[in-house]
Length: 103
Figure (cartoon, rainbow, N blue to C red):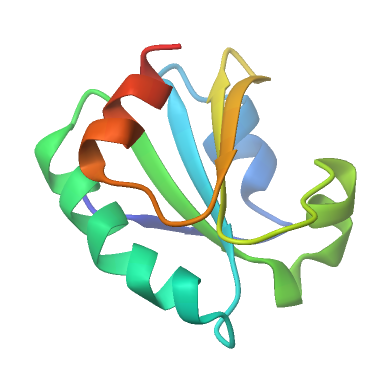
């Protein structure tokens, strides 16, 4: 499955109304660690099709970053049934992402 590009218009539908657990990568183009995380997120999305994997550039969605209190990036948040259930900040391995999704 491909990484879904989020914005303020599709966030509710793709994340909060999803019937699958969703991993959201809050990131920015200017963030070095975020760029390191991108290929890991893409591989994770391809390998674990039971999850929805999405990316949100906070520079275009400041209101969502503020709402979810994202203070450092990359910030990875897991949503299940529209609720945040887990989060981590910084570059993570696919194995750590899988553990996060199982929270």
